[in-house]
Amino acid sequence: MTTDSNWRAKFSNFIRNDVPESSSSYERSANALSRLISNPHTFGVHWNDIQNNPEKFFLAHELLAKRSPELGPGFWIRFTVHFNLFAGTVVALGSKEHFETLEEASKRGEIGCFALTEKYAGVNSGLVVETTAEYDEKTREFVFQTSSDGAKKNWISQGLVADWAVIVARLNMYGKDMGPHAFLCRVREEGTKEVKRGIVFGDMGRKTIGNDLDNAWIQFDGFRCGRGCLLNRYADVRESDGAYARKGGDVNQMSAIGQRLFTGRIAVAKAALTFCEEVFKHTKKYSDAKLCAMRGSNKTLSHVPQLKALYEESEKRLKDVDRFVTFCKKRLSRVLEVRETPSVELQTAIAVCKIRAVETAIELTFRLKQEVGSYALMDEASFKNSDFLQCCKFAEGDSRILSQKLARDAFSGFLKQNSARSIREASICESIRRQIQKYKEDRDGKYNKIDAWDSCWENVYALADAICDRVMRENDFEGDDNGNDESSKFTKSTPSLVSRL
Image 1 (cartoon, rainbow, N blue to C red):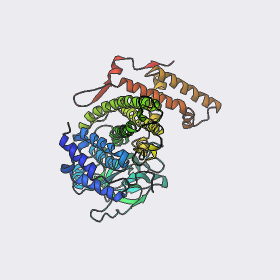
Image 2 (image 1 turned 90 degrees about the vertical axis):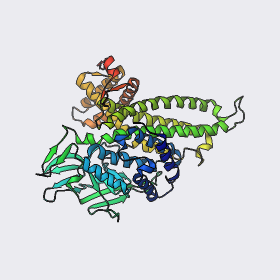
Image 3 (image 1 turned 120 degrees about the horizontal axis):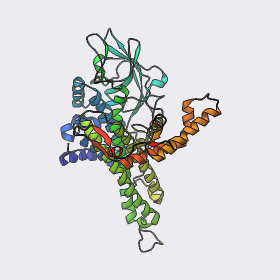
Image 4 (image 1 turned 120 degrees about the vertical axis):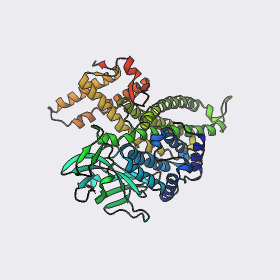
């Protein structure tokens, strides 16, 4: 679908006039989001845009990111938590009844949060869920419990104001652990906004940036929600006999839940690039007008050789990464429109998008700050909210964790198939294999696998870097008319595996 200029003007007007300054309270910021949610015809964004109009969905994130050097990360995160993580999960995993619930909640301007991360399973730990949801056959309710201090939901954006939550918890049925599932639950009473019985919310505390966004910890102690709260596209508890039933094939629930991270990674990648581009644009406007003494024929700061070279380098590098992100966004949009799952190749490319876009933006923004003297300290400069990029680094999967996963998957494939996708990757995999073998021998075979892997950390990240380079070189995915991604042209036309050296 295309996005008309009238919608863009309306949404841009909302950003200009309704999004509060970063110094505002989180309550005021939440009220602005509530107005946006409840007025789709006025402001143009709807909870189902992620499926019905992915182009608009991504563009809305980009337009907000353009103001991030001035406004900071708070409202951008608030927006993506509601429309991507919360509503997007319902769209991907829910059924007609859940969509109707979401539509009615939106008319009331009710806000949602995404209760996934836990105290002992944050951005540097991977997705581990210990919160439980025990099915009570007699009352036909799920009973949510925080099983330990480490299982408290942690850093839940807009948790202090949310009316609803998508809660990710381990479903227990008749004494059997069915694994993580997602549940759509009202967590505050309609009208009074009182917290539901069995839930405790707490404030994570003041941050260095983005205090217009509330971040909460959540603890469950016997919180109950009806059978219908289970997002049941792929699994359900039957009303007739209370039995657990899988639907739609053998779909891994955690993988299904994690699909929202794919859209989020594209949005985060584009936001990081947009932030960096805006910082460079504003800074260059200043340096073009700043005269410097003891210069040659070109007397402006922009013509100091190291700064001029940085401007030229950044333009090329940002354009190259943006081209790759845009390509992957188009591929993912086709998948979203038909409610399908991205191929493994596309999932890998999306991880690379997030890693390369964020790391490139961080590097270039930091380098620019070093070249413009005291201007970098001024409130009028665009550097004051640079920690927006720090938020991008750990949002929707920390860049280090994504790199670890890329490397681990490649190394596992190397051991199984005795080959890799490039000579460089094969060489690094072989180095890791030898390091791990030596680690085992030095300990007479008594070792911890994680410790052995950690001992190779430099080569692990070198392997991830090699994978990122290869994927960006390939940069050519095909899809059929239904948006189902197929193998890349690179894979079809070029030998995909290189034998172990």
